[in-house]
Length: 152
Image 1 (tube, helix red, strand yellow):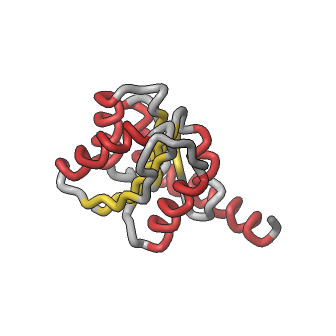
Image 2 (image 1 turned 90 degrees about the vertical axis):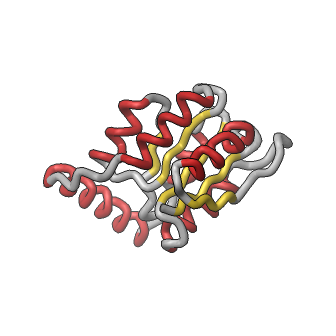
């Protein structure tokens, strides 16, 4: 699997831990930055990750900022992106199993590296259940996206 990852200054240190962790699981990583702890704007890193997922260049994406909130807001503006802000293992599993999320957001100031690594592992390894009720709900989300793509 190829995973695009991006972080702002508030998530830079955690990104630097997560990248080699993902590679140790046998996956390829596309790191879109940032490359330091100097202040940057989170949308500038959320968009390239989402573009990689939507274009098929990456199978999934991971976004990290201080809380994960800004990144998840920016990501969910992109039609076709289903980004979940996750800070616990149960949510990491449920968001893949039930919601077929294609982008994961986390907050470096909220969770530590060990928890983040376990969240990433679970999120990567959990398949979408493809359950009828979940598919139906995702189709409703797609209808919402389609409505607002035509009428911004």
